[in-house]
Image 1 (cartoon, one colour):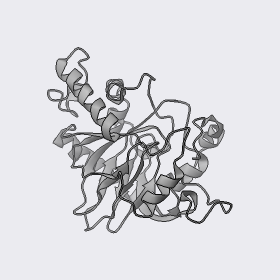
Image 2 (image 1 turned 180 degrees about the vertical axis):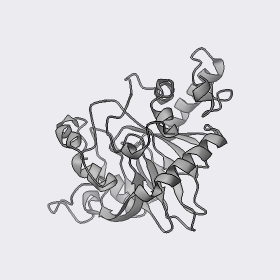
Image 3 (image 1 turned 30 degrees about the vertical axis):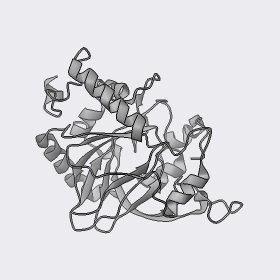
Image 4 (image 1 turned 120 degrees about the horizontal axis):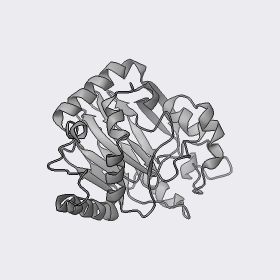
Length: 282
């Protein structure tokens, strides 16, 4: 566990000790928070030295960021002219942000080491409290990217293409960059378009806020919870690592979703498009 101990404070967060009472209590508390508000924060989970290494990595790759200034709905899908103008599929918002795609990370990337570690995957699975196993995502672009936001950037209300996201804040903006979300606003059998529309039009009912600090680990149900990152103020770039987990290890983003967020779709995205089977519109 020496390699993992260099990244995670294993005394406070003994993710590797399945029999540990401390780990058991931690998992129970995390599940409680996930059930209550669809999200959980573990403060100072990643050691400061590891965060510094990740910041260096992200900074060195910064010039390869895929920047997007695009207008899209929460599903990253085309508008539907047969639906009313105020239907959420027709409410378009401007997004200004970027990703350092996963396939750009060097093999020995510290972020790769965290993400590819089965101890971490098992710990995340325990914390989520689901009977179904979870897997590291097959998507070559979105499995564990760095999210990047600069001055005046905004990441509007959206749903993720995967069930669960684990985020690690690497560098905080001077102001703004606050994570906001509405937990479990939809489910596979019910899109809840009316409630999604109300939030997009300014309703604060059910909106939760989470102002992360570097080193925090966040667990989040991003496929079912509408969420956004508020506008960045000041010159400091916001970097966040986004290790991502799914129920179906075969599934990837649909090509249009991959293109919207990562700038391109691979042959694998096209080949696996029909593997999306959860019934949701995106």
